Image (cartoon, rainbow, N blue to C red; front, side, top):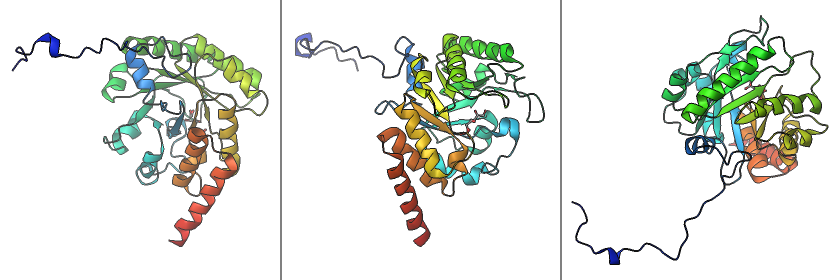
Length: 296
Ligand code: 5RP
């Protein structure tokens, strides 16, 4: 029943408190619409401002990658340790429990396999299916300098336009061809092009020299890919250095799921990314927890 009988005077309008208008915590994202911000907040932790994305989408062009042969067995137990999962709709629907409520970043481009020219991708998802799957963002590969550079940039801009219509962020993934130099100059170029053309955030590779110029010149958040499997301490050092130089997270795959103890590695990466822990300390945690697990 409507509350009609209480006089207005008994209500407390907190006339002495001004309504607050807070800036959104994420770099370059303050002017986005509410739904877009809300989805980004399902990817980036609002307290730390960072994210640990677990990337398991490798099968979309290279089939059953080592560590991903059985996502149900090897990856599902890692879900509590990731802020966000980056994957294909095929794996999401077939294997990931719908009770998983954190951010989903859906691989939305594809086409060629490792047997063909990888830059020849097209958009591989319909926006309706992205929304149906309740994704937090779409990911698209961008091949700056690649054979199909323009096509891949157009894939991204089309997804950005569609995403903007529905409040869905687009993650641009900068793919570096085998014969290209992976240096800060290339990463600056690739990341800036993606941001200028509308990507909500950009994934790139860490480079030892001048990475801070890559993050400084990219007006939206950057997360780093893990790349090929490294010894655990080296991978933690890379994550630490990237965060220290302005990255807002990692989108790590092989360095987590190919580690000897993937769940512990995911936790060690979290310590570095969210708590700013030194890589050596996070590695100590990894090693001693591994010993404890072995003894138990
Ligand atoms: C493939 C991708 C992968 O998600 C990306 O490479 C992350 O995985 P890894 O840390 O194993 O490099 O975008 O194109």
